[in-house]
Amino acid sequence: MNKHQRIKKNIEFQRVFKKGKSYANRQFIVYMLKSDQPEFRLGLSVSKKVGNAVTRNRIKRYIRQSFLELKDDLVPNADYVIIARQQAATMDFHESKKSLEHVLKIARALPKK
Image (cartoon, rainbow, N blue to C red; front, top):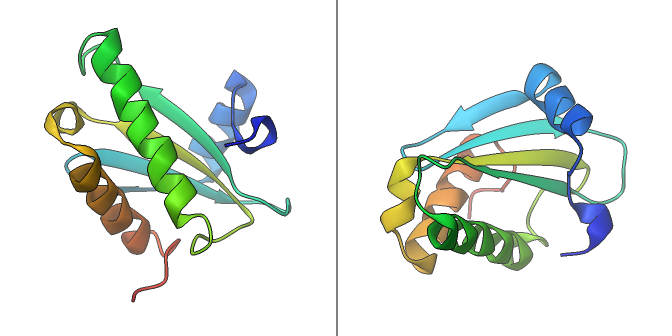
């Protein structure tokens, strides 16, 4: 994932939270905001309540890898902010990818196959 595909600044996160729409399941909350840029951007948030640093970093790696694998199917001109809930800490990569796909289908960011 390139640098220009990440949301890092607090102002950018707040804009997605305020103007975007949210969709959720038991493991993830997805905020999505349509924009006019050519590629999607991704912001991640994993609270300290989820686990220690190793667990939080593993969850973020899983989310980034899932988005890399789904990038051709995603709505390209949008900002996504993913918030991981505590249940995400116990999942392996395939379960977390399936859960993310479920939320993105609810958000209509992924076409139903």
